[in-house]
Image 1 (spheres, rainbow, N blue to C red):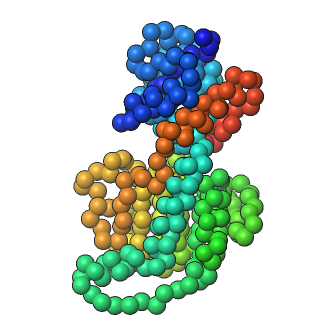
Image 2 (tube, rainbow, N blue to C red):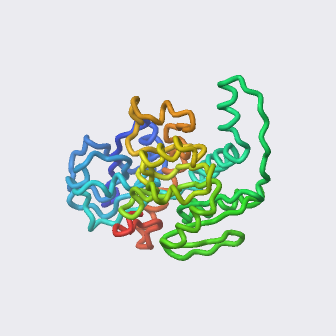
Image 3 (cartoon, rainbow, N blue to C red):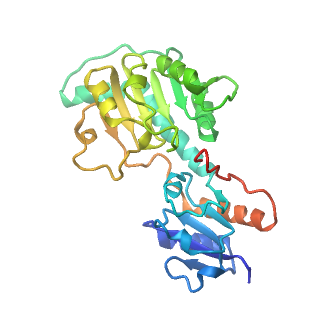
Length: 312
């Protein structure tokens, strides 16, 4: 029996699958499942996905909290989260592969004028448009961490010019990397297709406001697969209505599920996806989390430890 008892605290539809996969990843170990926890003081490791606010504060002897998801903004928004306890986030190659697929899908849809032709179909209008080459398109990636770099590596062989923006300086072969406020202005001014992979932090909320969206070239496409809080919805809708932005392809939103009365649902220049760009697979994620726990138990460094000040 391990002294560091395991807890699964998750509000997810596939909770039973998580239980099965975690049980396989931690063979022979008892796994308490919130809220059925006989002895909260015995819980030392919490495996969490969208835990209820305040739930983790009820375990006084936590040694580590492992997020079963890549995003931790929901966790950090809980004022009762024990911030003295190390927190890790999930980095799963399978999730990264899914995000690459989604970014390629959306970038190529924009590049090949799919939204424009879809509108023409609705009007039974047969009209062909000049097709720029990939080399004539600049794709700007907001957020140039692991996901951003992986997406850049998939876009470069297709011939796109790729710009990468991050808060601090980065470099990557074949990608023009910029950072900070001046770098953000550069990326926006040059991006025919803008992809946001940004997390939800104090520094990213409302980042794409009216002033910054106005920097985009006329006819640009905005793609958001990061977090919905990055975009000022009213500003984006105004830019779409004015024709300055041709299309918005959105996978994430400020409120999810997207309310049925939200203008995005009915806007002809908006494509809505229900937060499906890269879904966590319990099979691969459970193995990765188990490896993190094993490293922790062995006294090694925690991979993907969250910086509470940065928010990721």
